[in-house]
Length: 169
Ligand SMILES: CC(C)(COP(=O)(O)OP(=O)(O)OC[C@H]1O[C@@H](n2cnc3c(N)ncnc32)[C@H](O)[C@@H]1OP(=O)(O)O)[C@@H](O)C(=O)NCCC(=O)NCCS
Image 1 (cartoon, rainbow, N blue to C red):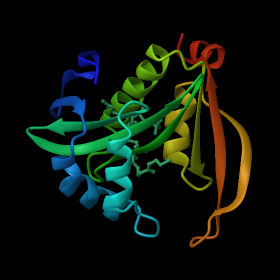
Image 2: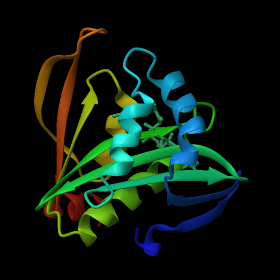
Image 3: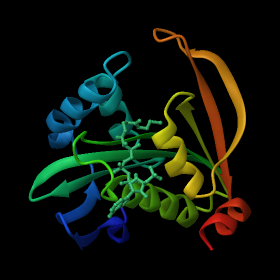
Image 4: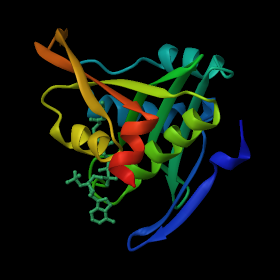
């Protein structure tokens, strides 16, 4: 894992730093996951599989005062990448942790030469969609009823180098 993924910042609310996710993080990661995605939380096995796929995956945790407060993961394949997951502990939203995590994933995608980054987001998740749009992600399609249990569509979004630089420039 590239050391360049580690970064930290001091904000009004304390120190948040990013580092690669390791198996020992799965306790707090799963607690956040289950609280935020009660209907379709990833299992421990799913996270372990992602961490086992090191060469194509890039998983980070955000830590504050030694506690995991968020995480995010990227799957990079040839010239494209997928944002697999991103989450910040509820109660700590709106302080830039999600932005910091997403920026780090996109930097990694760029470093790996991925010209396009894709993701799926629930159609009713306005907050996440706003975050993605700020980074230049654009809606390119809808998967009807993708989140089966909730009966909610997934919006498919894509960020290209051009769309990213337009919105962030
Ligand atoms: C989506 C999610 C990851 C965003 O994380 P976050 O830490 O709240 O994200 P940020 O704080 O970087 O940005 C969110 C908002 O806070 C604002 N913000 C960021 N830093 C800020 C700061 N220092 N002070 C005030 N506001 C700030 C941003 O402008 C942004 O505003 P907007 O929503 O109006 O665009 C988080 O809400 C989450 O975990 N949601 C549940 C899981 C989920 O939906 N994941 C996505 C699945 S596709």
